[in-house]
Image (cartoon, rainbow, N blue to C red; front, top):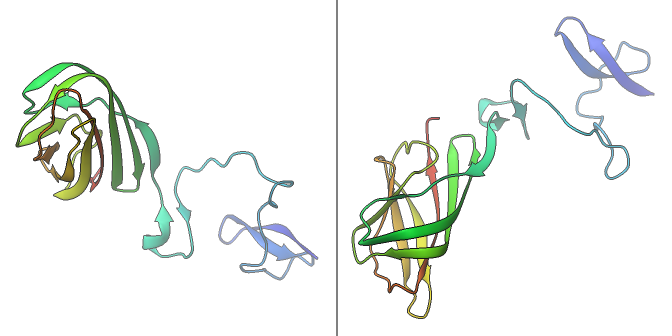
Length: 168
């Protein structure tokens, strides 16, 4: 007794009863779990989740990699990083793990190359992995640098996660 109809007044496909005259608001699912699913959804705008207000609109989601750059490290000998990001709206979360090479630091350390410009100051967390590991908070500054203030020994590898906001 239900279906999809074209509502010319709104230029939209809407859920209807089969009589074609009664709109069914919030009563029909699109697809069915595991057996009647749509493959892909391509939108040129956004999607509203949980409501119709501006705060409920998701209009940007992106995943990718970024290339860390040397800030104020005392040693930077061919480090190889796995550096990824996830951007949801204006919120960016970066993850970084050093796989090889040498990065040495003592205090007032900075790393650059963030994938999007930093809108305003944010905080995160970093650690170094090794026999004499250390960890602590980090600061993401609008100069597009991540700052942290703990020391390492050369056998330790840098690992960090940080979330910040951008206008991009």
